[in-house]
Image (tube, one colour):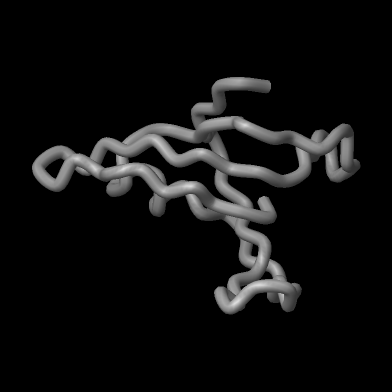
Length: 78
């Protein structure tokens, strides 16, 4: 994911919807770039599904965060 377009999170329930831009990866291979796509879910459950953290901070942004791999994420706009 190259860019996150934030949207409000419901503070009482933790539900969220976030716009993203990046690459669609399937079976470890880049399939295609994605744009105007959303991930959604519940923050409490979302962070429990963090499976891997990369060692590749994105150097072209002031936010230096690595690739994050989550299991069972809800996507829309693919």
